[in-house]
Length: 458
Image (tube, rainbow, N blue to C red; front, top):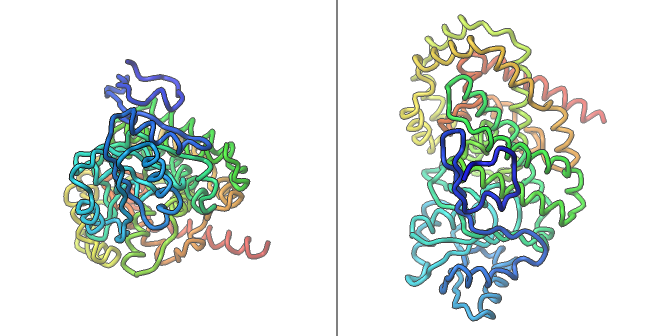
């Protein structure tokens, strides 16, 4: 079947192989999605319909009380022999994986993750490693990983994207979602907002690197985001219809990851900032903001960076000279300073990707010079940072670094080194290639100071 040229309802993409003009075959292995009031009651029906006999419910102490116990009761009432496990180790790292593997009965034929980001990620990853299918029962909507075919796990102190598989069923009962902490719902909206800048990164890389690009998937994500942003002012009302729209948007965004086979349609520089802050907070032993809150702030920062770049005359000869003067030993020292015990992971990423190596940078600078008007046009298509900041503030989501504990020193390190969390090409790498990171960072920080002053005077 041919890939749709116009965005379609979510169910049109489920369980169907779609041949695309981009040259790839897209497929979302999710078999069903239920979003709405009371849909948790459909869980036993799907277990039977998909012919599973021994489901294993995975949750933590909080999600057990919210929905895990009810899942177990529903399955038992339907005559289904289910067992449950409440995680004691919730760092979502190698030790968590070990706890899951040890606790899964040998005759289990299905894993059901009850929770949000980390629990559902661990469910999809551990079930993938164990060769078991999985279901997802959402207790909140703070992120877009529900439908993804990847999982995020802490490995060696650094967030790693791990190969996993998609869940077969997603249940988003709005009677449960409306009772989730409001901050969690806002974080989900923040995660969706990040698609503004991550899709921009993909488009930039298509221009500069000739990276493979899928227009129908981009259009699908953009249309989904526009629908949710239109309803955003009503999020504070906890309207079940709006919460359902946010949940559906997050699921669709995750489905785009499965369609494409990587997180390219859903993660860019704004996510790299969030991952970097998580690493730093881990090193400092300090709690950080929620992932979606960090992504929202990162999105505003990336938009500000793009605006400052558009205002800057670029000297491509100076950029080449800066590239040739790259001091790799000094860069490695800074990575060790910033990343601490996670530095080895960041250094290994660079050793494989060679994104900072002089030959590749010179090639990219040449391409940028040839296509600079097109690049500026793409950057100019982004929404204004101040407009997005005001929308986030209206919704109740953090939009400024200081609101999530990011000071100016950490912000400078973010613009310089957050790109090292992944090999993916983003605006952070583009600015680095041009030798403009420090100059543009200074301008963004000065702009943030003015905003803080204005807000204090209000």
